[in-house]
Image 1 (cartoon, rainbow, N blue to C red):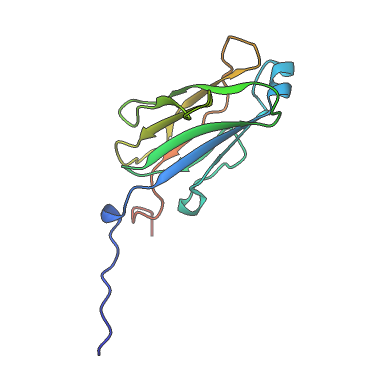
Image 2: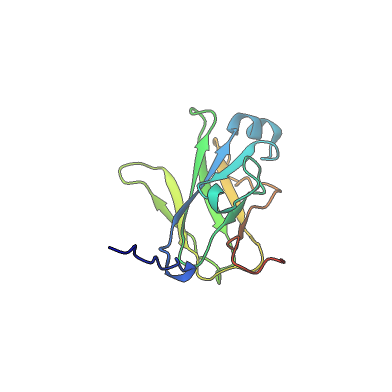
Length: 155
């Protein structure tokens, strides 16, 4: 029996992926210094697709149209309250929605990427820490970036 010819995989037909973006916060240090600078570390699950800036507030997450984004937070000190209070991004790109894990008071945010990106799109995260009622917002700005290797790079 002759070998079957494989059809090349097309980018537009690949299924959307979930991309989890996790903020690791040192709430004790942030409360002591009254800011998140040097106390926020961002990671995502999309390093193989080309995300960069891991462990910094300037994480650039590679995404494409249809991807589902999920933002969550992990405190370094489990006895100090930390919550993701807001995700602000251009609503033409994504519209984050706050949700709560069932049976808990743990907040997370989700959104669907509405279009493929040609330029990085920065967004802003805000956090509630301890008993402070004013949200903390880092000066570093994470961003969503378009897919790498889409054939548009200079050859």
